Length: 111
Image (cartoon, rainbow, N blue to C red):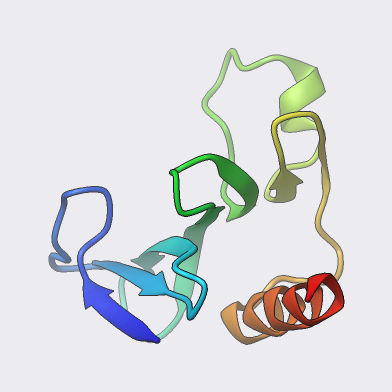
């Protein structure tokens, strides 16, 4: 329905793009992308999908966790999917277009 500038109260800045996608059902996805030094490719990302009430549906991330993070979490770095009850590898939905298509198809099956 709409793509808003900014995510989680922060605006984009040099090397970091922040957007919020608002879907027709008013669910939202916050999108944070860190660009490589050439600013031609996305190096890291955090795409977090929420219900209208801000309850997490699913996170699609591509980043490494900091040193000292438990092996149970870092085993899936850099590409991982997370819900309130699940954390696992993300082998299929690694680009924003693929993630948005997954969301669209999931919504169609729930209607």
